Length: 75
Image (cartoon, rainbow, N blue to C red; front, top):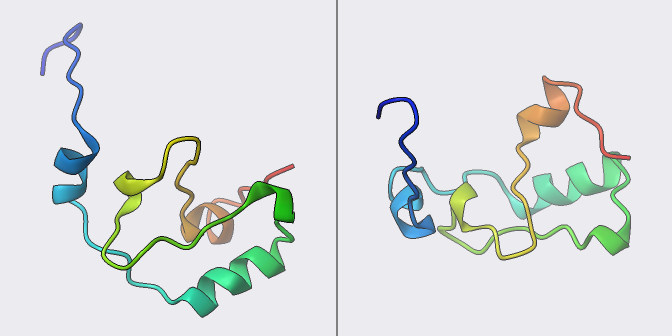
Protein backbone atom coordinates (compact mmCIF):
# COMPACT_ATOMS: atom_id res chain seq x y z
CA UNK A 1 0.00 0.00 0.00
CA UNK A 2 1.49 3.36 -0.93
CA UNK A 3 1.43 6.47 1.22
CA UNK A 4 -1.89 8.20 1.02
CA UNK A 5 -3.89 5.10 0.15
CA UNK A 6 -6.65 4.20 2.53
CA UNK A 7 -7.73 0.61 2.90
CA UNK A 8 -10.58 -0.40 5.18
CA UNK A 9 -10.97 -4.05 6.07
CA UNK A 10 -14.19 -5.39 7.47
CA UNK A 11 -13.96 -7.03 10.87
CA UNK A 12 -14.55 -10.38 9.15
CA UNK A 13 -11.54 -9.85 6.87
CA UNK A 14 -9.33 -8.76 9.77
CA UNK A 15 -10.49 -11.64 11.97
CA UNK A 16 -9.69 -14.19 9.28
CA UNK A 17 -5.97 -13.65 9.81
CA UNK A 18 -6.03 -13.66 13.62
CA UNK A 19 -5.83 -16.71 15.86
CA UNK A 20 -8.74 -17.40 18.21
CA UNK A 21 -8.46 -16.41 21.86
CA UNK A 22 -6.27 -18.85 23.79
CA UNK A 23 -6.69 -17.81 27.40
CA UNK A 24 -9.26 -18.84 29.95
CA UNK A 25 -12.20 -16.99 31.42
CA UNK A 26 -10.54 -17.46 34.82
CA UNK A 27 -7.40 -15.66 33.59
CA UNK A 28 -9.58 -12.83 32.27
CA UNK A 29 -11.43 -12.58 35.58
CA UNK A 30 -8.08 -12.47 37.39
CA UNK A 31 -6.94 -9.58 35.19
CA UNK A 32 -10.17 -7.67 35.89
CA UNK A 33 -9.76 -8.25 39.65
CA UNK A 34 -6.04 -7.57 39.90
CA UNK A 35 -6.26 -4.28 37.97
CA UNK A 36 -9.53 -3.36 39.72
CA UNK A 37 -11.62 -2.69 36.63
CA UNK A 38 -14.80 -0.92 37.80
CA UNK A 39 -18.10 -2.65 37.02
CA UNK A 40 -19.08 0.44 35.01
CA UNK A 41 -16.44 -0.50 32.38
CA UNK A 42 -18.43 -3.65 31.61
CA UNK A 43 -15.28 -5.63 30.71
CA UNK A 44 -16.31 -8.68 28.68
CA UNK A 45 -14.65 -11.98 27.95
CA UNK A 46 -15.17 -12.75 24.25
CA UNK A 47 -17.29 -15.61 23.00
CA UNK A 48 -15.55 -18.80 21.90
CA UNK A 49 -13.59 -18.47 18.61
CA UNK A 50 -13.73 -14.66 18.63
CA UNK A 51 -10.59 -12.69 17.88
CA UNK A 52 -9.33 -9.21 18.75
CA UNK A 53 -11.10 -7.90 15.64
CA UNK A 54 -14.49 -8.98 17.00
CA UNK A 55 -14.95 -6.31 19.71
CA UNK A 56 -18.59 -5.17 19.72
CA UNK A 57 -19.46 -1.59 18.81
CA UNK A 58 -18.48 0.73 21.65
CA UNK A 59 -15.77 -1.62 22.98
CA UNK A 60 -12.03 -1.82 22.47
CA UNK A 61 -9.71 -4.79 22.60
CA UNK A 62 -6.98 -4.73 25.23
CA UNK A 63 -4.27 -7.35 25.44
CA UNK A 64 -2.75 -8.91 28.56
CA UNK A 65 0.69 -7.80 27.37
CA UNK A 66 -0.41 -4.15 27.55
CA UNK A 67 -0.71 -4.59 31.31
CA UNK A 68 1.99 -7.16 32.05
CA UNK A 69 4.80 -6.01 29.73
CA UNK A 70 3.84 -2.48 28.73
CA UNK A 71 2.93 -1.23 32.22
CA UNK A 72 -0.32 0.09 30.70
CA UNK A 73 -2.86 1.31 33.23
CA UNK A 74 -6.39 2.62 32.89
CA UNK A 75 -7.54 5.59 35.01
